[in-house]
Amino acid sequence: MSRLPAVRWLPRGIQSLNGWCAIAIGASIPASIALDNLLLGIVVLTWLAGLQYQKKLALAWTNPVYRAALLFFTVLLLGTAFGQAAPGDAKLYLSKYMDLALIPVLGFAFAFTGNRKAALLLLAGSLATILLISCALKTGLISPLPWFRVTPESPFVVFKLRLTHNILMAFAAFLFTWLSCCARSSRARYAWGILGALAVLNITLVVEGATGYLALIMLWILFGWQRAGFRGLALAVACIVGMVALLSVIPGPFKSRVQQITQEMHQERVDRPASTSTGYRMEFYRNTLALIQKNPLFGTGTGSFPAVYAEQVKDTGRVASKNPHNEFMLITVQTGLVGLAALLWLFWQQWRYSRQLPTPLERNLAQGLVLMMILICMLNSSLLDHTEGLLFAWMTALLYGGLESARPTSAAATMTST
Image 1 (cartoon, rainbow, N blue to C red):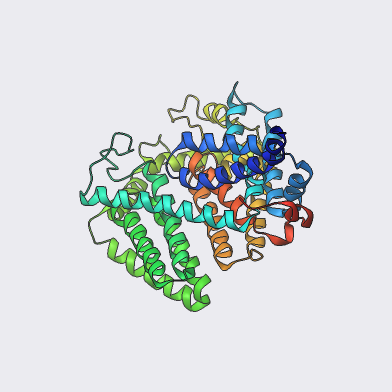
Image 2 (cartoon, rainbow, N blue to C red; image 1 turned 45 degrees about the vertical axis):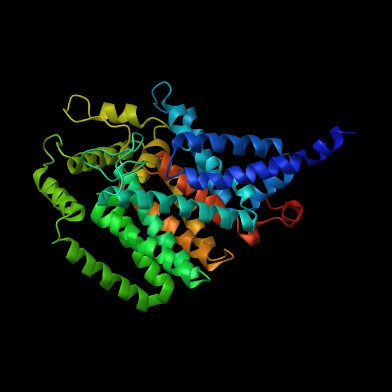
């Protein structure tokens, strides 16, 4: 008799644990890769142990965004069956894209409105904590702790390298600003607004990161459009022009980074190996385009980039690379135009169905997420990077878990919130 209640309540307990861990990933993404992996592992195990497979598969299949993510991952999976990848590279690269396959798994927990709200607030709280620590480091209120990622070149980052830090802060500024706009109390409105302003200052005056600058500009323009249409767009552009002009004359990370990029672009020449960060990036692009032209339709296989790029630059004195710092190029080298089309289809489905999400906050954040990812994927191999890739997958699962038109009635009726 004592065993019956435990058996009866086991599925509900597993489902609750699944939801709690899916939510908790919002706190771990900006802070800890190890915790990310632990929580993801628990989410997968509890998803499997919770049964209800028919409802879970229906939930994934009827959601067009989840379906597009699975299609893209399937193309990458098929890409491991052919090509020129060195031993182990195919499995390694596929594992880095595994977050895409987990979008429907995470989405099961985010079918509940309460879970989505809690997860967004937990992500915002984690980003706010890191922002405040970074600002405290800058002002000298605290000293770096042993586990911070500070370096002489980047003394004010916390848990991530400066490029990732600034990308996270750009999205944080956008998130905080919309939380401020949607807040019900004046106290919350002012608190989120102050955090949004601090995030902008952190990006522009504290931590270097050109990708973060561009992401902030793009999200700022999008916010203006979302908030007030053409009038908001014009105001946002005017503010950006004024801020860029001001930052260009004020000594600081923004001015020094822009000057460095400009000098490196003038210094580099096509007829000799690159010797600067900007030069390497341009060299990677040129050689990667040459690789794409050799196998344009299906590419050279998932995980093949290091091998084929090394062959491309052999005996030229140029540096070999494991990725071209451009996700669109990387996908096209590996899986050809077929893979590129699958990636673009995923982004299009996200943009298209963002308008059908249940709340203005979710709609606006979904549009910001997809535009930011398109931008940073043009400048880095962002889906290949752990933090950026997981943020994209987790936020996609969270936001599009609220796509009511894609949710099976039978599944929604039988699920209970955590």
